[in-house]
Image (cartoon, rainbow, N blue to C red; front, side, top):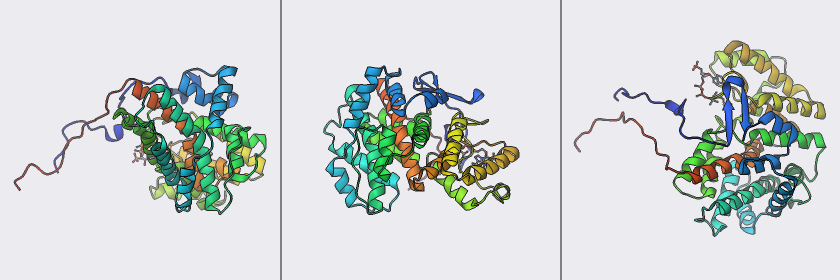
Length: 371
Ligand code: COA
């Protein structure tokens, strides 16, 4: 193999490939804004539905707009029989990300507007997915356990309804708020791997369902969204706060990549972590189980002092979801339930000012030879 002659940007590190108005990541100040608003303020003061509206419409909704948006989302929550019947024929012990990806594929198959990529229709398709993804995740969870599927309740917010569809009841307001905060923090993060995937697919003038299926595939990977599940497996592997520091020291000595730490863009801390950590601690107080946050802190202390590598959002989100009662393989699907908002905003933006995304590579294989 020959040496490379050009400066290859492995992993596209540092490459700016387009402009965006959706969000701004500022690693120098560890901050993130959606349409100009700091994410931590949105998390404290808004609902997830408000933030979805903001990402798709550039402004927070007026009271009237919020009402209309919520009414539409609630009216789209039920799953068509085609999805439920397909789920009945599938192995529900498979990973819920695969089940979800298939569910979106079926929605796309059924939507006769496949080739209508007008902004209005694309927004409507996005709203269908926003409304139906939680129903799919909850239905898959219940079917896996041989339980009756619970129909969506249109009198409830997205977060309240999701808990009810999973567990049969709406938990205490502090649990719902912690969950809603996590959805707001997960909603958008500029040109990350899954969003970039949705933009690449959109750039070919393919449809939004195909783009979202691709996004789900990219998000599933443990280096991206799948990390929130891996974090919980790590915390369980460590098991107790006694020995947690030693566990981390050994992991670093063995050059093990510890999930939930590090970030391509943030090198001095993830803007979303302080807010999520605060709500994960609230969950620990609520359930009266400090162990997971204590282990997390011990691991973080060693990682920061020895490697200067900081936790990312998945690190506090994983244990927060666990303490809310979700099974570990539901964590990344919950990320999808939120990120569908950011993906759709980017899909709309890409389509509005499109040029097919087609980078180059440098060939380093065998020289031309005779057959
Ligand atoms: N645990 C241990 N070391 C880590 C690490 C982690 N989680 N993340 C990065 N590092 C180290 C790497 O080993 C590398 O060290 P080296 O220079 O001595 O080889 C250095 O930090 C740079 O890491 P690199 O993997 O090149 O950074 P990247 O920008 O390509 O990757 C991530 C970024 C997020 C993929 C990477 O940090 C990672 O794999 N983290 C764990 C998965 C995760 O939590 N993903 C969710 C991201 S939001």
